[in-house]
Image (tube, rainbow, N blue to C red):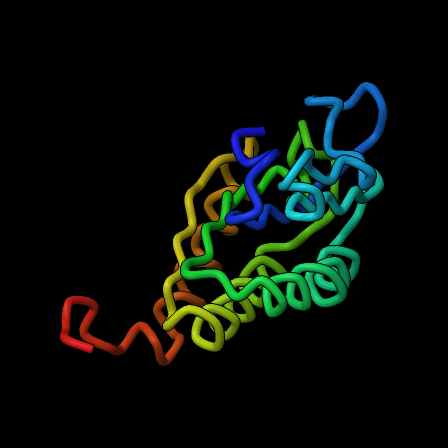
Length: 155
């Protein structure tokens, strides 16, 4: 909600949504307020969604929105509670799906904002699955061509 009225920040949230499921917000009709209307995009997915559904939400909503907005940096709140086996999320995404999505976000950040991409871990409550998801994302990050550049070099 910190960016609810801010037209300078695009927030795209792809998440499980149903009435009574924490935090009981994030319906697709929640789009910001005042000058920020349209700069909050909630992609509300059903319980049990998996890789294909997550990929389609990103392909159909996130990528076009980001290309229209043209961010200076992409920040990802990387929650893995959508992973299969997570007791809270009760969804069916795989470590491989998160890895592929990370590669796509790296490509997008290269296209739009000189590769500036920051991922912050914020969810995932089944430790074996969480470890596999984080490992898949880390491997995608380090395998990408942009990670072979000197991070503190001159531009």
